[in-house]
Image (cartoon, rainbow, N blue to C red; front, side, top):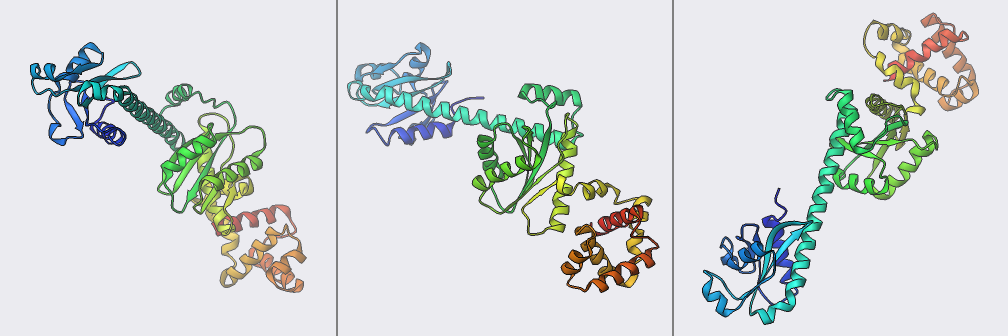
Length: 365
């Protein structure tokens, strides 16, 4: 791919002509003018540039020389080199004695612009490469484990370490710009846009603990992402195959977290591990049987289910449950007995209580 594009050439002309009082031409590696302060010259073959490119040296053309070169004008022409690659030439129109003092300045400016553009392009390609890698990991189906392992090796990523996927949901944001800012702040993280408003962030655990690492990332995001957002941590696992599992657990934990605590902006698999694990039982005959106790509650289902949700949320403590529901203790006792009678379950028996808890979780999803 050519380093010197028409757009970059015009940028060189525009920026250099702001600081020197002479016309500037930029020629490609074939000596054709691709940008100029004099638009009429664009497309012409520049004889002075051809000499500069052939000799890889600065070539000056005075009035006498210009008469012997077809279409040439007095000036100075300098080859442009980026990382050892000859990519074009830059020319200043005017008497060599007048423009010579500006030649090196213009050449250095042009090469700096080209080097910066090349570096930006490399960073963007590297970012796209990393993003494609993460998308393959979280989808878990588009590449073999061997291919992903080779990919990880090229990126210097060690999946023997524990890692987790964080799901960032942003109301409105430029995800690409956010990815670049996050890469600067957390170099170890790999990111990918998982949706129009979703960013999957893969990072490795440093031994600080799940909760501390989640809050540390949340603090960084508050600085670099002013838009309203929600962050959810998936399960931490080892191995390449664990990335897709962690991503799915983060998505499920985010959904359950929003349902249970709609005002919160920070969720974790570790806060909702049981309902996340049970989320896979949403279909099939097992799901129907697990939901059956709640379905038996009939016309009073909504009220009695809210009672059970509060009771389980307060670990079965009657006083705290009654206070949360704004009811008398006797009313709570009556409702719990009623639930036991309807479902045929003994709430004092651990296995029956656990079955009822699972039924509540599945019914509320």
